[in-house]
Length: 181
Image 1: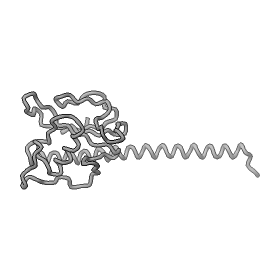
Image 2 (image 1 turned 135 degrees about the horizontal axis):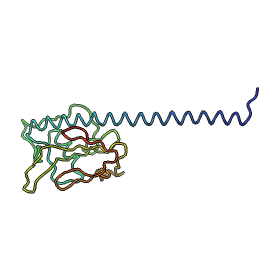
Image 3 (image 1 turned 180 degrees about the vertical axis):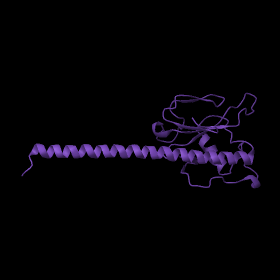
Image 4 (image 1 turned 30 degrees about the vertical axis):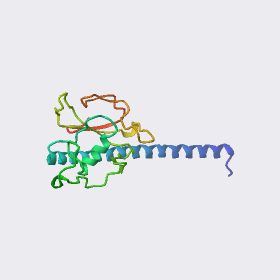
């Protein structure tokens, strides 16, 4: 009752195929778990933004769309700046971040280890804010992040001078104060 070389190779091959299938299923489940966790974290940030709005009468403003959006969001929700970027009076300096969200370099980081990207929406030419809402982005599983963390603009996303989002989102998870897109 000895096994031949061919029987042994077939048995090992079947075993490796089963292991590869199990690893693929595990990877898929982990990706879904990260997406669920990302959406949960984004809802938490949205709740903090609503509390910030109630406290200050506006969301944190973004004057230009560059890599500072994440810094401004994190600093504002920690109570360090008001909507105009000034240090608030002591009575209004409230840290709204009550649960642990991962922070790196002063920015909130999603489970995919990319910065959450925040935009204040629609600033008119005369400097007034026409639509007091926001856009919060996570690059999701397909997003691109510069290895040196120097660029956090999502792949395929264009932000106009007015703060409008357009383009192909390529796997991004997008939340506005109206819900997920």
